[in-house]
Image (cartoon, rainbow, N blue to C red; front, top):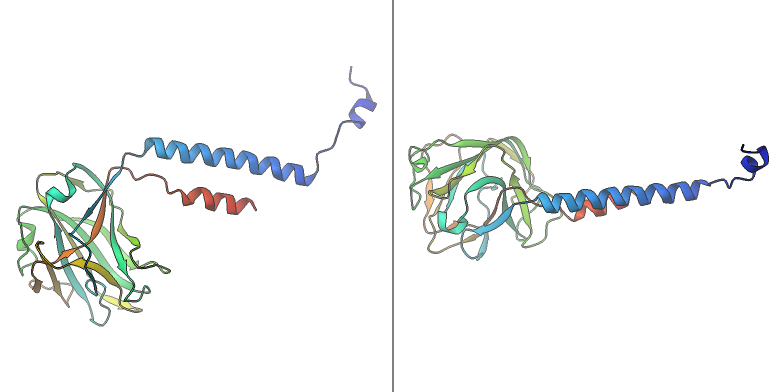
Length: 234
């Protein structure tokens, strides 16, 4: 039998002790999730497009009324079959990082072309283009020179590791400043641009390559996630 005096003398737990216990439990859960995410992650990153030489305003040149843009990366640069989980560009600090575009579409497409032509549709090389993003898009703020930023995280495109990979970006209107991203200027398949989102042909920027990072598979959980969880507990 438990006596009343025993209940009365049972030590009371104060608010601060409860808060500390809660924080410990949350941190244990966060660590478990982060560890699980790292274990389950199978993503591998591939930097493509050549060597970063200089910044360029295309495809986020907001001085124009609209844009249709294509770039291409060679199969040998990627070298792995699998789902494309993320495509990123490299920010160059000579431009603004406040670009927002409306009516934006991003497309990925296999192609046997080894160099782009000035005809957008012909560059698909009779392959099926997959829309991997549609809507409003904004370049993240607070980027430093050389930072990677995400363009899209497709859930419907598998790279076959046989053909080359074409990416197309178009938008219908914009606001904010022009963003520069890094390009290379020699021995690449070229870049194509037109200042109309539905243009059939454009100006070919021959031999240029667009610097990108392509993640194949499931990308790892960002280590900053744990930091955000810890901040919530303070």
